[in-house]
Structure formats: C-alpha cells, structure tokens
Amino acid sequence: MGVGDRVVEVGAGLGSLTLALAATGAHVRAIEFDRAVLPALREVTADVQGVEVMAADATRIDWAADLGGDRPWTLCANLPFNVSVDVVLAVLERASWVHRLVVMVQREVGERFVAGPGDQGYGPVSLRVAYHARGELMRRVAPSVFWPRPKVASVVVRLERLPRPPVGVDPTSLWRVVDASFAQRRKAIRNAVVRLGVDPGRADDLLRASAIDPRARAEQLSLDEFARLAEELE
Image (cartoon, rainbow, N blue to C red; front, side, top):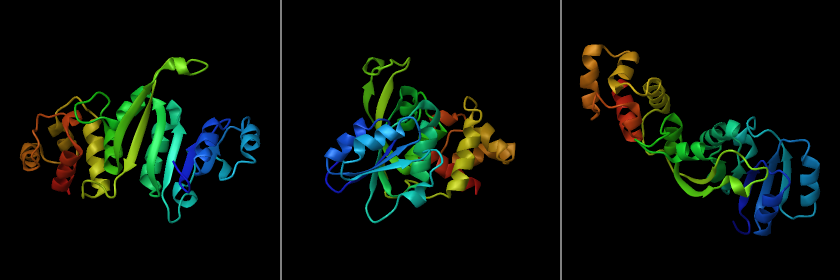
C-alpha cells in the first residue's frame, strides 16, 4: 500500500489494521458491522487522515454501488468461516473495481480458494475464483498468534483479478455444468452429462469431442475442460 491507494477493509474491529493501512498514505474505507466496537473504531480513527468508517454488513453490501470510481481498490480482511466464501465471491463477481484481495481465512477455506484439479478441496468455489482471479497462498497463520486461541489454523490468501476471464464460454452455461458435475463428484463425468439431458448413448462421444476422458471425475477437470464441455452442450 502507498500514498493515494484505496483500500476497503472488511471487519475493521478496533482499528489496528486500519491504522497501519492509513499510515502508508492509503485511503481506507473501514467496514464494521458490530455495533459494540463501532464507537471505539470511530474514536481511534477520528483524527486519522484518509479513514472513512462505514457501519455495514459486508454480506449485504451492494459492492457495485459502494465501490467505484476511476482508480482500483484493494480489499483487506480477516474473514470468519461463515461468511468468507460469500464475501470473496461477491466481491469477485460484482465489484470489478477491486483488483486485489488479501484475506485471512480458515485454512481449509483458503486452500479451497487456490486449489487446482486433483487438490484436496478443489471444487466449484475454486473454479469460480479461478474464473476471476489468480490466487496465491501467501502464508500460514498458527492458532497461537490469536487470543483467544482458536481451534483451527488460518492462512493469508492473495487474489489478483484477471483482466478478463480465461475462458470465453457463457458463464451461465459454465456454472450449470460445473454445479451438475460436482453434485456427485466421485462419479464419472459421463453421469453429469447424462443428468444435463444428453442421451446416454451420446455422452461418451460428446465428452471425447471436448477432449475429456468419460471416466474422469469432476475433481480432475480444469476450468478449460469444463468450458469446452459447456460449449459442446450449448
């Protein structure tokens, strides 16, 4: 972060990260929903230049309306397990002005964000992230650095928005195929193709036309392969 950069911080809490971000010269929009800590957050940031406190629920924000302008934003957040996937996907899908996300999340969620074919945790969330961004697991965070100490480990993930999706297929068709394929992720992909309305006698031929092994499982297929399959099914 540096002078003139714009940062939206989700879950600002008592403002420790907010102050550190503002010290770089960045403009910080600090979002906090907890009414118990909002007075303290406003107090510690009252005299800090470039900090705007916003009382809002990050799961209900109209990201497209609240973030805009002619310069990009970076999102920073320590996201709880129950909202982390929803917030990250909402920002990627609806807030095009956010070019970078740096989030601390529960380890299994962060690994899901950056997983590739064959990795543990790879699934629809991984594919939706890959459609919008390039992901990197930056570091692991041990439970011992928190108080009170949680029962799970955390990770810091960085997502850099891509200038355009890496596949050109219609997204509605793509996610229809992805969701159907992972509904029974341990079964061969030919089963998903049949459930999508293809005659069982044509399923293998359609998959081979997409350069996909009919015996492969959804968790083995890349975004490119799902895109080819969606195009064949259109």
